[in-house]
Image (tube, rainbow, N blue to C red):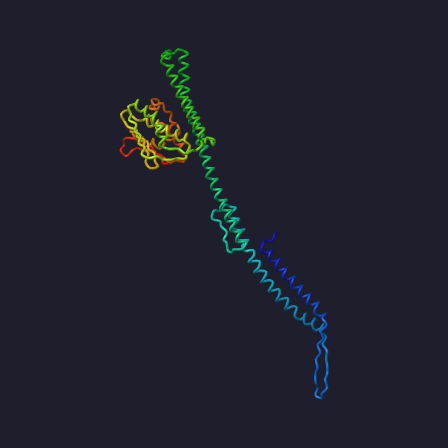
Length: 372
């Protein structure tokens, strides 16, 4: 069984202390008796005579060391033991504390933290480990968020492709059946003058849907980021509203633009125009004749208000889902395919812009606002 750090340090320190003690005692035992020391004592007798005596110092020193050796060695042993224990405890306690906390860190315990009890190298090491662990936890949390975002994005792509396949399948099947009946000359389908324009219209709707699907695919890809640039929102809105004004006039819709102030932006102009185009087209398509559309800038907010029947809450919560339509019959009249607001939602999220789409409090229309 391998020894742990405390027993290792203690045994090493204690052994070194004992070796030094034994070496010192042995050195004194062998060197001290070799010294030529003579002690002479003189005594005066009662008759006036003087006598001399000599002491054998080698024998005296040897006997003295041998007599004191057990007590001296025992004292050194006790002192060495106490010193070694305290020294080992003081040296290994921070290391054991760091090792215990690091074990908790390996289990990714977010509350794990090494207590810093000194300002020496051991304290610096503990602080460095704490900072490294905080950075590691932060990186792991960031990766978990990115993983969830990637998984969510991948799932959204799969759902979009599944729904798109279904949406394309239905008109393609209808178009194919119509063409087959026309070729066979079955019943009313023999009237080419009536059904050829319908087939052309169906093909155009399919083409627009495919174009929107490809556009969404480019938006979802990493390489779809357009170069950002400094733009004037007032200028962009003024330019974009002109063609929609003409469309509105043909439908007897009053199109009002109120741009009291300007907003300077550093953003992808192409993506912003795509989103605004879909919002304005959606407003024109779903505003009845004789009603109003108002486009305005207030503070850092852009609002597009169109007078119409408000969308019910049960539909409004799904309105930004791909191919979702509140009224499928209305879709054929307006040429919509349920991707307009989904594209808007995707672009605004990509541009990191907050938005709201909500019914007016007067229950006579809808309002789309974007915060810049």
